[in-house]
Length: 122
Image 1 (cartoon, rainbow, N blue to C red):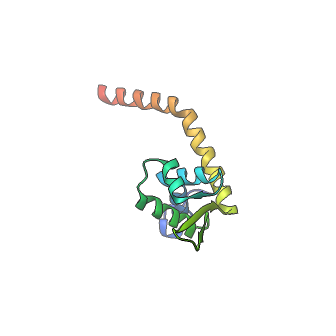
Image 2: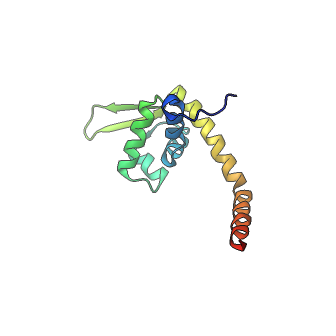
Image 3: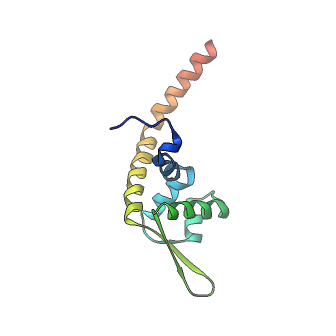
């Protein structure tokens, strides 16, 4: 594995990783692992995301090739979102990391407490 590139302009993977692992990116990718969803379903399932932020996140993930957006020519508008093949692979990898973080949360919280206690003692 190569060392991380310290020049953000020379490493497009940094921006891709940022999109995939953003607060809402992770959750949207995880929800779409279950299958196709409409915008309103995504918003309800993700929870806490504003309409504007969800729209931006979906647009970014679509631009990166992770999400497929299909607009149906009906009234009212009906738009479905699903993962592309690339998106499914990305979502599975991000979900693995998210599950690992959840499993390790007690250990991380204990480390934080120990750190904070040591810092407060001077």
